[in-house]
Length: 168
Ligand code: FES
Image 1 (spheres, rainbow, N blue to C red):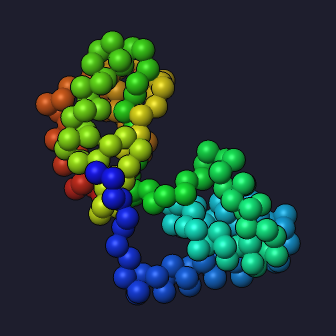
Image 2: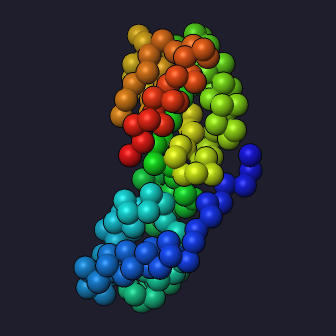
């Protein structure tokens, strides 16, 4: 799936605008607050919407290019919508040797997205990482902070169901 635009109603847009104004109004108009403002926006929206970055540039009276370069420099920021939960599939050596690629393939099929994408309902973002630091449990998947060890493709549907039932 390549289209991962999340449909946003005008009501949601209004709420987003209000949330952004709340964040901006809690800082004075000084460029040194660029980073904390972006961190607040990331925390609130789970990504940095383009319109929000433009508003920040106007509010702080800094070039949009500066806001964009800070937003793309730090890995903590993302420029596309993220899911409420992030599923990380380990592609490190231990997990790879124990079938990590099959786990990733199954997740991609079950969620109908590719690694790096977010489901259209905004529930899950799927990512691959190098090592989750739990090699003894390989192959490993993490959903937010929860570790699922010794995974097999057969266990994926129940893991997804469990996470859907505990949606935040
Ligand atoms: S290689 Fe997968 S947890 Fe370390």
